Amino acid sequence: MDRSATVERKTKETDIRIELDLDRSETSQIDTGIPFMDHMLNLMAAHGFMGLQVVARGDTEVDDHHTVEDLGICLGEAIQQAVGEKKGIKRYGQAAVPMDEALARVVVDISNRPYLAYRVALNDPKTGTFDVRLVKEFLRALVSSARITVHVDLSGGEDPHHAAEAIFKAFGRALDEAVHVEERSKGSVPSTKGVL
Image (cartoon, rainbow, N blue to C red; front, side, top):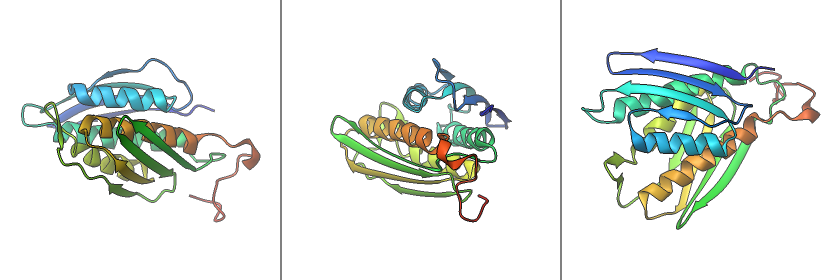
């Protein structure tokens, strides 16, 4: 079963191409024009055991917002396409990941119902020139496009880089668990309704 997808998005603000393979862990090649996002997406892919190729250009001379949001849209579309009919998947996944003083917990439901609960409070939102508040915008766009439910809780964390790193690693691990094929399901859709 091929669980991969390629998504392209070109607007007046961004030009993005994403290739995602849920079942092939490989060295990711990520170039978003935003070094911090390159780092975060590499971490997500590595800890989520997924193949991820990203090339993105955006109007970062304005700020990073459009590029980060559109990356979320494209990655969400790729996840939705790669999961397909959702037959045989576990559906739910969760992970708690520490990064020094930061501890992030992410829970994913491949539900066909987009919802983001984001409980993250930071005293300082900047790491270098990157505004870590954009992580929420990235996830909001991803959740909406992928049509999944995601809960993010940061129960500890003073350094915004550490907090973001824990969130991206935890999201990768939780997504990997949720899309994992459960042999006992015998290929059925994981819902008592028979459809997601």
